[in-house]
Image (cartoon, rainbow, N blue to C red; front, top):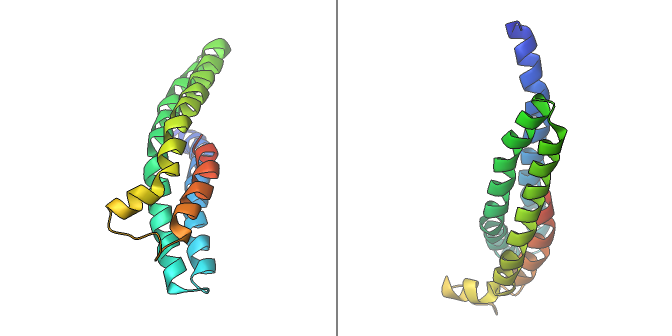
Length: 141
């Protein structure tokens, strides 16, 4: 395989992954741009919420990142049963991680108060974390 063919094949694999990462980061940017027009307090709550959501979904993202090479190696070896098994293991891992993640997310007011953020000042923060974690878990998988 020539360097040009190798580059095209790598680019074909990398573009969807890069697009997904940029789309995920853009969601936080859009949240900040929209909420920033409302008030500074709401903007700070959404910023804290984005940080918490990202910290909470990192384990699920790690599971999916571990599955990607296993599934791609199986597809490259034309071993479709092993590829499906890798996909199923990743989905099960993400689903199992979603339960503790959502339980921790439900306790986000306690997390925010432990960090010195009072819920009365940032009432939007815990609600944003709860709303953001539900769709973020599915985006990470």
